[in-house]
Figure (cartoon, rainbow, N blue to C red):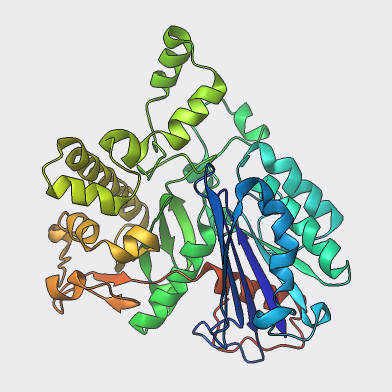
Length: 415
């Protein structure tokens, strides 16, 4: 069964074609075809990279304003040219999509019907940089493959649908809940995958574990995972809440926004630009939104870069503490995504705050760039795992489960 996974963000698109057969293995398999498109620099060209299992490469750059027109030709490289890995488009059995916001109605991965597509489009007001483009990709794939090919939406908010009311309600008027204003949480696909992978690495039943999963990338969020379910998280109504991120502010005093509107005459669009694109590591350091460049500048004595790193870690430690409180204990701390997987300095700084819990890092293990490894010292009472997140694989498994659950086995995959 060939499953195409499409993971589109505000400035990137990932596509992977998986050839799957029952039983689904517990470890991710190598994709047959791999597409990466990145248009983070909207003033420059977009990069398109395609790799296949056989090694046939394709790399090119196109102007950002022509990228939408390149989508269909890029998809067609699966069955055309040197990157061909299937005979034709009819060999694609299902398509799985990452969708950022499912709101209150779409609480589980689901087959995409006309009604589901309309709800995804309606929720664009909650995720204006994500849901609109995700909806357009769903429409494009229906046009390319036809309506007979099932498409599945896997929601970043779904894993957090188990949050208890006291964790998702805000301190505003109760009427906010009627308007859908509540904490939803995001990065759920990643938090779900690394939770399950953590149980595998520890040789434990996921339902016995208390985990704090730290997704630290361009966007950053934590989840408190108890018995395999999310019971607390740091992102909220939008992905802007919680931790300091690359360019996002994370949680700020709402009074600041009132002040900026009343006394500095900021508009909604200006606040959006300020909080989502000009804040975080970029805004504090004045150097870069990239943690690697912030650390390099800090090492050279740049005080603002050092402040950005220290503030990032301070907020991270504080919110890890709130997650531990929600769990009433901790068995393992899990780091994932770009910063979590690659920054030994961030991991060491965060873990240095939890010695009183018996958490002790192994400096030598942590100094490398470990993948799916426990970097805690042998005597540590709390395990510290570095796990390479595999959101695309998680989407493929969900798609596989939903498109043919009776025929295909899922041995080795906890549900």
